[in-house]
Amino acid sequence: MTDALDGNAIAGQLEEVFGREMTTARGVCASCGAASLLAEVVVYLRAPGTVARCRRCGALLMVLVTIRETTCVDLRGLASLDPRPMEV
Amino acid sequence: MAGATLRRRLSWQLATVVELVEETPRTKTIVLQAPGWTGHRAGQHVDVRLTAEDGYQAQRSYSIASAPEDDQLALTVERLDDGEVSPYLVDELRPGDELELRGPIGGYFVWEESLGGPLLLIGGGSGIVPLHSIIRHHRALGSTVPARLLYSARSLDDVLYHDELTGAGDVDVRLTLTREQPDGWHGYRRRIDGELLREVAWPPAERPLVYVCGPTGFVETAATELVELGHEPSRIRTERFGPT
Image 1: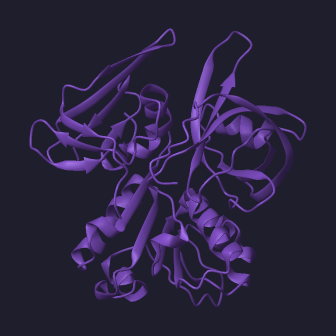
Image 2: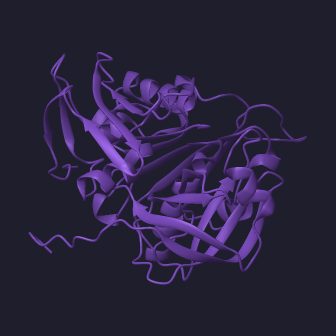
C-alpha cells in the first residue's frame, strides 16, 4: 500500500488522456456533491491502476488503467468535470 | 492571450545531462540540456521515464528546481533506497547521458507574480524543490511580493540549497530541524504544528497565499492546522510527495 497522494501526481497522465492541463479542472463528486480541483483529490498510484477518490467522502471518482499503451478511463464517480482554469 | 490556448501535445523527449550537483549524500540536482524545451512555470514538474534493456519501463514525476529564467532545466532528485528510478538517477547517471522526459506538467501548484501574496511557502524534506523554483523565480523578477519560507528537514545536513536559501535575504527563511540540531542552533527544532504555523504565518486577515509541499502526512498536518488557524482553504495549495 503506497501513501495517498493528490491529483498533482497524475497531472501528466491526465494531460495525456485529455489533451490539456487538467489539475485545475473542477470535478463534482457524484456521491456527495463536493466540488474540488483535480489537483486536490486523493490519488492512489498503484491500486492497481490509478484511483482518484473524493477528499470529502472517500467515494471513487476516477479510475485510469493503461494496458499496452491504451488507457481506459472510468469517470462514473464524477457528476461533472469542468476544465475551465481555476480562478484564484 | 485571452481566448487563445496554445495546444501542444505532451510528448516524450530526450534531454542530455550537463552536470550533476550533489546537494546532500542522497540528493542530486540534475542539470539538463533539453532541445525544444518550451519553458516552464515555477512549481511545475516533469515525468521521467527509464527503459530497461528488456523493454520494461518505469516512470516517476520530479519537480523542476530551476527558475523559468534560468538557462538550463534542473531537477533535484532524492534517492529512495527501495525506489525503482531514483537510485539510478542519483547514483548511476553521468554527464553526457540521455534522459527521457516530458513536460512541463501541472497548472495548480504554480506561482506567478500576478497571483501576489504575501507568499508563504511551507516545505518538508524534498518538498522544498518546487518551492525553490518559486523562490528563484521571485528573485529573478526582483519581486516586491513579501515571501517567507518555512522549511522542515531532519538535520542541517539534509537541508537542500542551504547557502542559496539563506544567503540572499530577499525571502524570510525559517528552518526547523526535527531530528538533530547542531550546537548553538537558534532555529526551530520540532515537527510542524499549529503553534509553529501561528508563529511563522502572516495572520489570516492578511490572506497569505500558501504553498505546501512535502510528504503526505506533513502536507495534511500543515493544511489542516492552517485552516484551523482561520486561513482560507482556497488560498492554500498543496502538493503531496511520496515514495511510489
